[in-house]
Length: 198
Image (cartoon, rainbow, N blue to C red; front, side, top):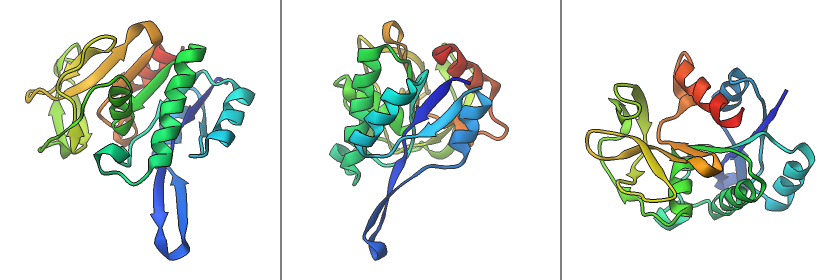
C-alpha cells in the first residue's frame, strides 16, 4: 500500500506545560478510504525528515487547524514544518494536497495574502468555477480572493473567496473545505486525492 503522510495541529496544554501534536481521527480514516496508508508527521523537522527519507511517501497532506503565526496563530513550529514539507515536495516531485489551513499555507508559500472574512464558519456553500454546483463545508475565518501564477483558481464562492487552487506542473492542490468532515466521505474528494497522488 502506498503511504501518505499528513501534518498535525498543535494543542497547547498549559496545565502540563506541553505542546501536543494531534489530529482528528477522521483524517487518517479519510486517507485510508482514498487507498493509502496514513502516517502522521510530528512538528519536529529532524524527526519528520527522517520519516520522509525512510518511507518515501506517495503524497503529503497539509491538514486544517491553527492559524498561521503571521495571522495571529500560536504554532510557529507547525508553520516551519509545513513550509519545509512544501520545499521537500517541490524538490522531490511529491504531490501535495492542503485543505483549509493547508491551502492557506500553500497560498502564503507562494507569496499571496490572506484576509479576514465573515460568513465562512460552520456553514455550507455551493462552488462556482470548475466545481460548479458542488456543495462543500466551510470552517475558516481567513481566505484569499486573488492569486496568480503559478497557482490557478479552480473553484470559488459567490462572494469571491477562492476555494480550490492548483499548481498543475508540480501537482500541488489546495481546497478550503475539510474532506474528512463529510459524512459520508465524498466520492469527489476521494477521486480528487487519488488523481493527485496516483
